[in-house]
Amino acid sequence: MGVLMPDAVAEVGHLLAVVEALDPRAAQELRGGLPRCDSTFGLGLAFFLAATANGARAWLGPKRCRLLEQLDGGALLDDLDLALAPRHRRTADGREWRVMSIPVMDGTASGGCCGLLCAISDGADLQTGSALVLQMRLPALGAVQLVAAGEGRRFDVTLQTGGGLSSAALADMQDGFAGAMGDAGLGGDLTVGPLAGAWLDLEEEALSADWSG
Image 1 (tube, rainbow, N blue to C red):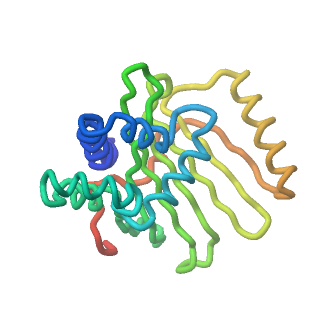
Image 2: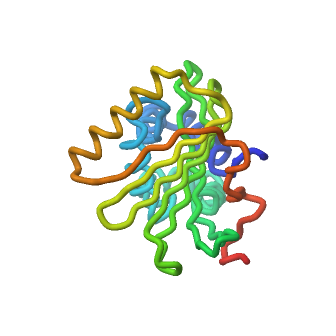
């Protein structure tokens, strides 16, 4: 398994360095809008996906874009748009996915970013319900894959890791999942297991701007 879709991480890192030199406060605001490896991850991911849905320029706003365009005629913004744009992938089971590379603040003092792959399928082509896949590498666990599938009032989640989880962590996760599902009035199961042999082939090398076979 290679490094997952690194372009967005590199491009956003470059953007932050440039904006930091021009306007440190603006750079801090941009960092604050990125997903983080902490309890705010889900909210941060949802915010980032919404903010970038119409491209890098819509995310940054006209004032910041004007500053950046004065530097290189918009080349940095064009590269960022390309890196953040969804790729499309058809996996062996016939599902079609929108795959996005997302930078996530790693929570270290240096304020670095790591890469998250987010893939979404509405299941309309197979009538199998919607599905979400998140793939990431974490220092303590190695490669991590979360697969969530929903249909009607049922929502099943499978978490697979390269490293093991403690029994206490597993119990906390099961309790939290059961509580959240109960509050939402949904049914479903959380399954936690090893990643070996289960990694979905959604890496950048297999992706393109068009549906691939």
